[in-house]
Length: 198
Image (tube, rainbow, N blue to C red):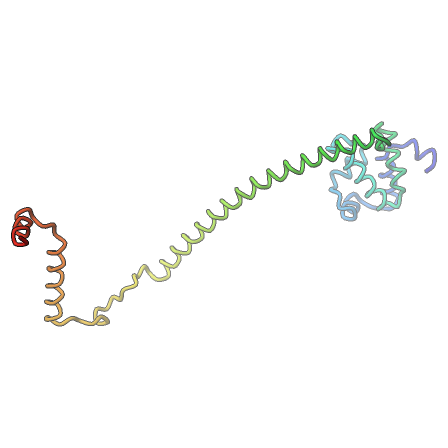
């Protein structure tokens, strides 16, 4: 990278390279899959629009590669321009302690994510049950509309066998006997039944 380029902001470097290749922001957005608004932020050196430097650096690298620029040179321009330098992990016991803390923090975040997921799955299961119930009710009403509300019995009495008068009398007598047997016995009948038993 020349001294003149080294004095420029990363956004100016990217914008000039894009324009020299005759590309629009839309073209670069399609190639990099970086939203056009984020490309505008990069070219305008508005890095505070990003939630973390890791995203800025990733987008700068992708954008640089598509424009045939050295990604590391653009990252160095970003660091000089913003004063945000990446910090390598320290060596020795302090580095191991920092790595251990980082891993511990990551585990807690993953565990927290797991509890959120189990809560989400409980909600999804309840939602599925409700959805299935609504679908079944809907199908019941549709089936009822299609069949015209007809019951399972036929409307034509000729389809049923008719009982003869003697069969009807036998059925009536059986019903009366069943009713009589189900009635509780009165106190006088119990006394008479007890006297006849002795």
